[in-house]
Length: 61
Image (cartoon, rainbow, N blue to C red; front, side, top):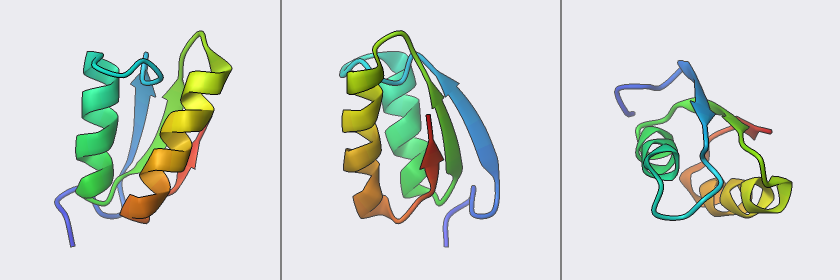
């Protein structure tokens, strides 16, 4: 169990690889957070959401 298990975080700008939002999203997911992802490019958010499925977190865009 991670430190964010049962918590929900809203991440802005999470769709672009190598961005701060992307890094935060992946770190929080590894710690068990549920995520709400926002950004300008829907396809990149979809790609990130697919990546995060391996962390067993819930993510919404």
